[in-house]
Image (cartoon, rainbow, N blue to C red; front, side, top):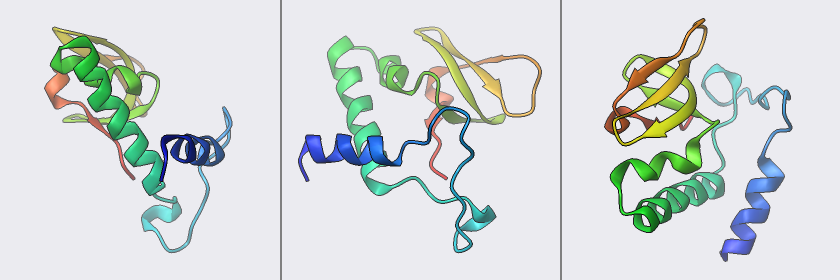
Length: 108
């Protein structure tokens, strides 16, 4: 699969802003899992970003604005710095700071 095919697949499977996740009775919780092509694309972007900037925390730059996993649970990644990340946990009224090593791509 070429990068163009992966990008087109990612765009085709990306929900519109405000659109609820697609439901699937076969997956846990009824929410479809991240398409393999999209996961592969994001992992490649993370690797490329880390290589481009020469810093370990830079791998999280492509995930800004996306849901991520932290030790405190899932949330939306707001910002990334060398000293840590700011994440808005699901169901919380305020953001938290965590180390960049503790933030992972949320694959559900």
